[in-house]
Image 1 (cartoon, rainbow, N blue to C red):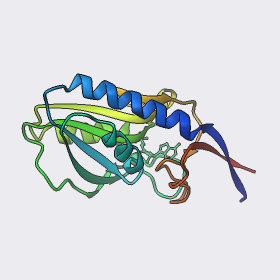
Image 2: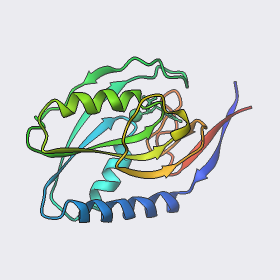
Image 3: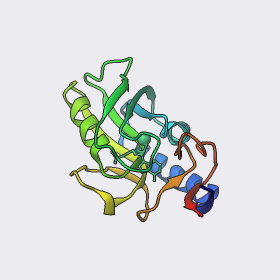
Image 4: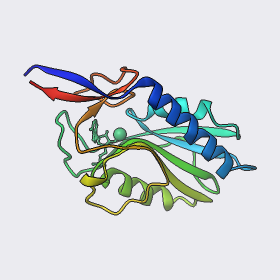
Length: 174
Ligand code: IMP
Ligand code: MG
C-alpha cells in the first residue's frame, strides 16, 4: 500500500512550543533537580530537545514499553521491554512521552512509577489525542492537542519508519 506524509506541525512550530514548555518547567521546578524519564523510542527526540531548554539541574533515564505492534491500532497490552536503570525514590520525576492516545500505556506506567516513591511525578507529552482516550490520564504538560489522525515524525513512527522527520506529519494511505 502506498503512503505519503502531509505536514501537520512544522519544525519551527514544534521547536517554538518545546522552548515554551522548557521555560514553563524551569519555572515550575525552580530550585529543584528534575528527573526526566524517557519512554523509548518515540519520546527520545522530544526529550533531548526539551532537556536542552531546561535551565534547572536535570538527570535522565530511559525505559521502553510497547503497546503497539507494527500496526496503527492499540493492542491494549503494555509490555516493559526495558526498565529504568535508576531508582525514582525522592526524585521529582517527569515522564516524557511522544503521544498520549488511548492513555493505556501512560496510566500503567504512571501507576508503576508512582509506586517507587518519587517526591513527585508529572507527565509531559509532545502530542495529545484527547478524542481517543479510554483511560483517565492527567497530562501536566502538553505540546499540542491534535485530531484523531495517525502521525509520524519527531520520534513517532509508522512501522519503525519516519522517526527522523524534523516535523510532525499525518500518514495518508493512498
Ligand atoms: P496509548 O497507550 O494508546 O496512549 O498509546 C501510546 C503509544 O502509542 C505512543 O507512545 C505511541 O508509541 C503510539 N501511538 C499512538 N498514536 C500514534 C500515532 O498517531 N503515531 C505514532 N504512534 C502512535
Ligand atoms: Mg511512545
